[in-house]
Image (spheres, rainbow, N blue to C red):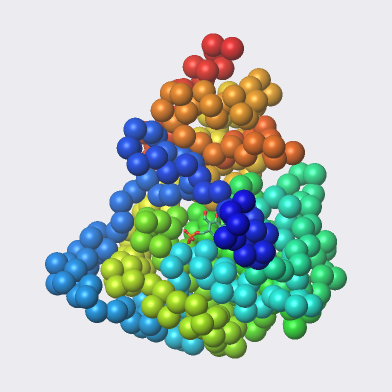
Length: 355
Ligand SMILES: Cc1ncc(COP(=O)(O)O)c(C=O)c1O
């Protein structure tokens, strides 16, 4: 460890992103990106005229993007904040709602960034195990006095908590903030957005990285009561006031306005997911019931590590977590185009035949 590190930095637990090879030689099914290009409206909106304005700062209020999102979800501007990916929004939320005497609770198997943020802000974390079947039981959180964060659907399992269950959690303690991270909600799960007017302690975080084909654009947002949004803005203006760049503001707004393309892409992914699940089950895999753009699967015939390594040797990247206890034998497979999924299933089938 470097002698230049502060004590605080030495105690960090940095997140390890999925592999991002820059040479395009893999079928990339490891970081839950969309296989489809950005929406036609996005391509059209990023004009030369907009590029020529890059000498000017972006709008700190992110007005154009906030308005487009507010319109899409039938909310007010004061219900929306946008960020440089939803990771940034999650960071704002952790800083705004957790701290001394107010810890954070999340599942043992969930998005790894929660742990990283907890360490970054020096928070007390309460890690609550998912049940044996990987379901999240909200009763396990009922008495927790701090902030709760739930990825719904969860990553990497893909499993979702029904909305009435989240509602029970919100009602159990109206003074406790519940952050529902809906990064994957557009692929068939039930969103908590309609409950925002009713519960001012609900913050819903979403992203354009998955269902809107903008992972590289880094556009995330949160929807919630004006009180929660203004708390997030307090952190944002203490950290990075121009947090969304000019091109991403335009791209994000255009992506939200291209509803037809969004429906087409999310529909295709759901269809490809059902196909992939059927094929993997036919090959003897256990596949958790996913409502996301990925599946979490394991085979009794090959370990998770071997499957990951052999697929990689053959040009297919999936995500595997080494030393991860009860998920050690699973791999997470992003749902791509049908062509990509056919290639995956063919390769898996060949690997199993060769055992
Ligand atoms: C559950 C969950 N939340 C949030 C994110 C962050 O997404 P982004 O920062 O690209 O918006 C991810 C990314 O993989 C995720 O899996």
